[in-house]
Image (cartoon, rainbow, N blue to C red; front, top):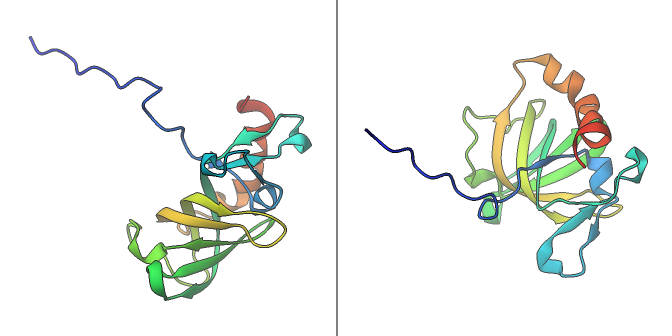
Length: 150
């Protein structure tokens, strides 16, 4: 009889990406130890700050720039613009780096603040095939922060 493989302990796995909007990332601040990432201010939802090493964002591609490090993509969600760097070298399934496409970006937060937040892209996925992806995104993120995440 075959034995099941042991599951990795939760302490050895990294936390899942946190769904956020560009407007939320503009209010992030660095943790005390800069290597520890960023804290997401969630006061608007009546919640405490949340560590966000990896984020899940969705938006419409505004522009694509080739360049060193894999280039960059500027996107816009319903709350503002953000940039994903290093997009040329990440998994993306079918090509989705074209102006007007609605995409999901998983990425490491590189910078926040009053300007456009910047991510280091880890994965891109084209979500343009279903208009509900864009229509429901802001409500989905709000529900997550208001009712689901501690």
